Image (cartoon, rainbow over all chains, first blue to last red; front, side, top):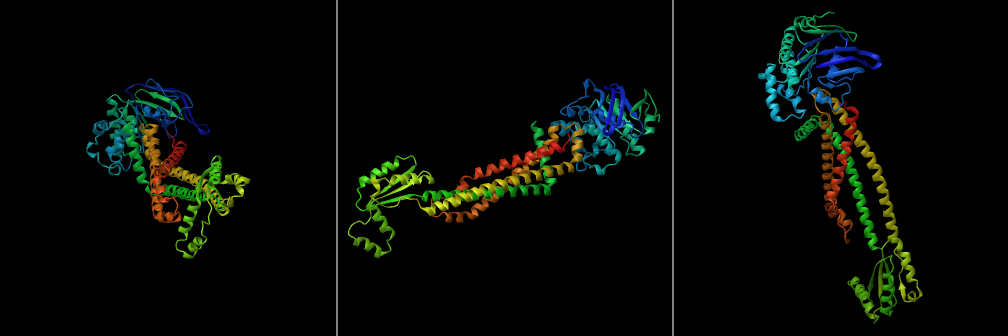
Length: 226
Length: 306
C-alpha cells in the first residue's frame, strides 16, 4: 500500500528530514511511526501526501509512484488519503456539517452526495447530534473527531494522523485512538505519527521508530523504544 | 464542472463581502482611473467636434463682378469640381445674393433702401468652395488665379485665416489631450494593477488557513485559484459599472452646456454620448476586467503556492 524505497529528504542548508528510509506498509495495517521531536516523523507524513518533495529515493502509494507526482495530480492523491493534524485545521466560521462538507464541496462533489455522505461520517465519529455546532462550541476531542470525519468523506484507503492526540487530555486522546482503531477495522490503512509513549504501548500494533531521520526499529507488535 | 463554477463564484462573493473595505478601496481606485480616462476621452470628443464644426465653416467664397456672365461662373465651377482636392462647390446667383443681403438686413431700412436706390442688382454671382482638407485650399486658389477668371473675380479666393488659426490651436490641444490621456491611462493602469495585486495578496494572507485546508482535502488547483480570479472579475466589473454611471450622470448634467456650446451647428454632444454609450460602457468594462484579472493572475501565480 505504502512503499518508501531509500527515501532521503533534505531541507535547505542540508538539514536532514529523513535519510535512506525504506519501509513498506501493507493494506489494512495500523502503523505507529514514533520518535523524538525532529526525528523525521512528520516528514514521512508530508511525503505520503506529497506536501514535501523527496530529495532521493522513491515513494509508491498503491500502484502509483508519486516520486515525481505533478502538481495537477496532487489533489487526486489527497482525495485518496485522509489527513488528521494535531492543530485540527477547522474553519471557525463553519459548522461541523459545513466543515466536513467543505472537503467534498472543493473537490466538486454533487450536492446530493454531500447530503448523503456527511451525516454518515458524522455518525461514524459520533457527532451526528452536533452537526450544527461551531468549532468553538466543541471540546478538543470533538474537534479532532470533526477533522477525522472530514478526512473520511472521500472514503480514503489510507488515513495519516500526525500527532492527532497532541492537544488532547488522556481521556479524549484514548477516544481518538479508539476511533482510529475502529476506522482501521473497516479496512483503512492507518499511519499514526506520534510521540505519545502510553498510546503506542497500549496499541500493540506495528511500531516504526525513527531517530535522526533514520529507521532504527520496525516491530510487528512493538513498543515505544526511546 | 458547472457546480464547481457556481461554488467558485459563491466563494468569491463571500470573500469579496468579508473583505468589503479592501474591495471598496480597490474598486475606488479603478473607478477613479476609468472616470479620469472617460473624462479625458470626453474632452477629446468635444474638441474633435469643435474642429469639425470649424472645418465645416472653413470655405472660400469667390464673388464675381456685377454683370459677369453666369456661363463663365458655371465653367469655373465645373473646372473646380473636377479637382480631386475640391469637396463641394455651390453656385449662388446674383439675385440670390441680393435676396440674402436683404434678409440679413431686414431690420435695417436704410441699408435696404440704399440697395434699392442703386437701381440694379449691386451684387454679382458667387461660388462657395469647400476643400476636402484644410491644407488643400492653396491648390484651389491657384485655379482662381488663372487669367481667364481673375479679371471677373471681385473678391475672395483665400480661406479665413482666423478659422485656420483656431483649427490649428484646437488640433494642438487635441494632440496634447491625447498625450496627456495616454500618460494618465498608463499611470492609473499601473496603480490599479498594483492595488489589485496587493489586494489579492492580502486576501490570500487572510484566507491562508482556508487555502491550506482546501489543498489538504484535495481541492483542485483551479478551485484554489478560482475564487481569487472570480473576485477580481467582480472588482473590475463593479468599478466599470460605477464609473459608467458617474460619467453618464456627468454627461446628463452637462448636456445643456454642451448643446449651447454648439448651438446653431449640427452637433448634439449629449446625444452623441448616449448613442455611443455602449461603446463607452463596454470598453472600460472589458478593460477593467482584463486589467483586474491579469493583476489577480500575477498575484495568484506569484503568491499562491498550490
